[in-house]
Image (cartoon, rainbow, N blue to C red; front, side, top):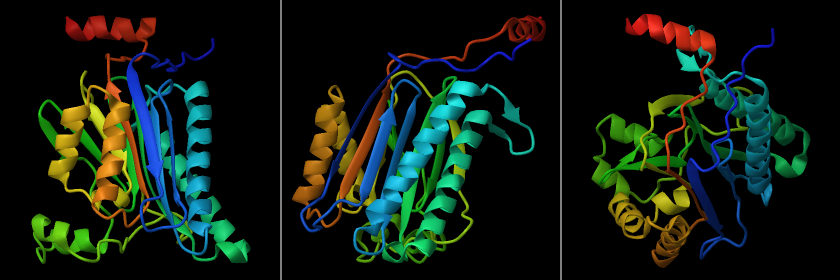
Length: 283
């Protein structure tokens, strides 16, 4: 008997948009973004290192992650939990895709002289069964707007964040710090990388925003919150306004944002065995 699949289209359940901009100072864009509302995937990578090599790294990262996640979503049952890792299959798929991207970028940097020293941050979100799996490396961020509150769901893998964690800076002082860009983790720098993964339940009306540090360095969280709250009824306008605000504040880096709004719940389809187990557990 063929195994029941967990594949379900999220079309009509999410509204997704994305924008990327070179900014006011850089002469080319090393950010790469992708989103697919049908499978519930958002990905953003912020490349670095070498002339134009940053965009090579971020491009490899996004292309690899999107390709592997799409393939896995089509053929695997995402409802399965991994008891050893404590993660859903969706989270493991996203994490493993990022790990694979790291190996490809690392190998490319070693074998192509023009790509030596390149790397990229990455943040991805995969929605499934009324949950979101979040995986990130570096200082690209994911925020969640729920009801009236904006929360940063990822913690930067950066020297500055480590100094905050150790009490050398307050979060407010860190926001004003001059050097925010020294990351302690990135794809392609070493043969292995530690991908931080988390899972959270989602609610109808939630808005998720991933961004490169070109936004978060130029725009304070309160202003991100105000912009989303003001223009949230039109996500495309909201993302354009965020990029405009980053440019108005200096635009010192490439600025990229991808947003997703939860329009309807999206529970995974349940087979007859799942339903029977549900009946017994409720008695």
